[in-house]
Image 1 (cartoon, one colour):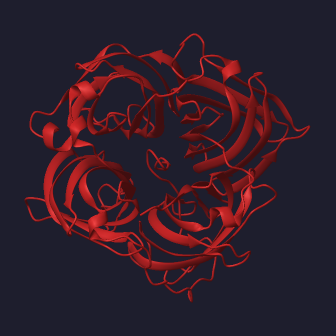
Image 2: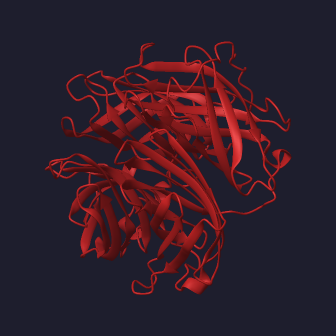
Image 3: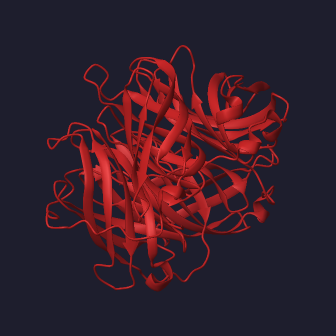
Length: 522
């Protein structure tokens, strides 16, 4: 299963299967409304996508692309460059040009063409003029991801300085068994081509959890050909080689390009800022997290909420999981024991911490996390037989109500069907109203590997209902109905992070679905 990504600073996530349930064929596509125009996409943007190869020879192989494109605000992509890693074939780099369009609701398309006249067809949803979502819709690959407006003034080695927390995930073929792999940690570039140090944790099914491991000094440099225009560079650390694209001095996109192709991974790194907790007592508040990846039986994703008060004890746990269609819910009570957390003082200043809790029927759940702000970080699931990672975000603004959440949102779905193990990638835009029923309407676009209706699903109307329980801080419910030809109903739990962000986990048995919805602004 491909990794699950997140909003708003890194990327996005969700999984969608074409057979979660019947119904939905009569759902219509609402007319696009809003304030987005061609001029909403103007500037230089870094993008990253990952997924699976759909070719017959390499079906299911890990695939990723990371790059940068220049949009002129009038429908033209004047230039672009991308790095592509396909573990079913080769690593390559292309230059491209193209066209794009934008509808009033922020939905649109991008078509890029390489020097050999091969095209890359993408559908996008703008979250704002500064960032958005992408899904490949030409049937060549099942992949999705995000893009961010770059600050071209930061296309300098001196701009890359400080501690950057990263989350990379993909696959490893370094042993007999191909396995998902997760790597989270931080690196410390010094602003003059040296990565002085760092710490990271690795987890894969062949070697288990390893860490914290110290990163030996490494290096980075801007690409002499593409660095000044696109912010592209090359970095080496932790025994791996990466291409990277600078979004700005606080945000970098990475793609692993090892020549032996034994590991394929990609992800983002964010500059640590604010008063990062250095002691257990300093880590307090309510947090929600979302992780996705794989278990020993199939695709796995989980979403949860917990509170901490600086004592080292976790309180108010609410946890939901979909493990290959086996759905479970855990909430705080006499069933929970050994619920503890700690900030790593051995690696002081790293933002690293650990947490664990035991449920009397569900077993022990263990995690490691790295904070890039006092209330935000990346998290890796270390529970038995799980390889997964995701995002950790501080909750704020409760109690949550439909009136406080009513707005336009974008979200990205990607994942695996539990019966066919085929990947599906969708992005969508929806409007959430204040009514207690049928309060959600929208449109999704995407690609499904091996679908009997074809690989592409454009312009699928959706409608549904979000129900807020109590003050909204724990698990709420969402049902989404997708129209023809997808014709499916999806039932989910929702954890609200704040007025702009919701974490979503599907509770149907036929697929693993998890993701993040983020409010639009234009």
